[in-house]
Image (cartoon, rainbow, N blue to C red; front, side):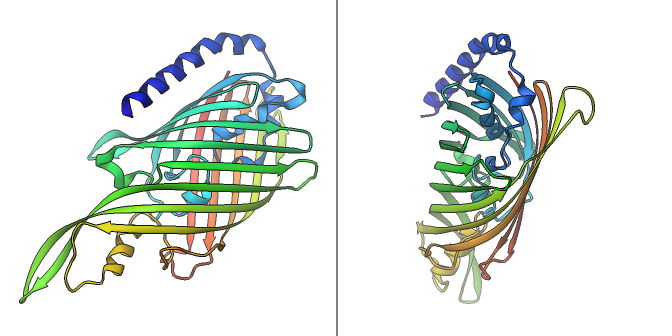
Length: 338
């Protein structure tokens, strides 16, 4: 699988380079097209590119290279999943490259790099085919993401292996309502050292468990994008896109342990080990319910092919069993679009 993923990434890069000259010769006005940016697009700079596909009747293929610093480590698309990270203090450098065909189909490759044992490590990659359509009344799209993780560093990576994300947004009103659906599943291996007291003496037992997760999210949002031209000079544009969201969903998880620790409640061990990485409910299979209220905003500045973007996502959990009922997700990105 690893060799197949590398071959797919190299093939993807070859296609990007072969399309570079064609895209440059088209000479379309990227600032005007980026003015169609919708706050529906999460906080991802890659997702912003989708708004260029069908603006002003100028259908073009293009690609983009960008690099960001972010603490959203679970999902490339869905901040409803990113807000479920137990540890939001970890920051990764996230380089990515994407190609969007004029038909609406696209492909992106994303890497995650952070310091592990005092040295930079590419501990996770994501490959995402997608399709998007932008019409006068509505825009919609769907994407699939496969995550390839470094098995020796799996407790620092996303718990997901596969993810599907879909959205639809109504465009003919000042406040734009939207709906997004997300599903993800995966598993990871957790190794814990657990103390055990026998006859007054303490022993340390290494317990290895396979943790399996399934997640479903539904996000209803309203947003509006504010655009300002010639902010710092000619041919530039500033966009501010605030959004309010109500997020519902359900979770299921299970743990298969290779050892049994006497005198300790298995249930407590399972919850503790999963919550090291992931905010879970008190039940292994939860009912669908409203879970989170969220506010997010993107601030993006464009000048010709160059862009800088900063995004912030704040979530408040309704579930009182969470040790921390708020989540803060951010990213800062810069990129080139051709």
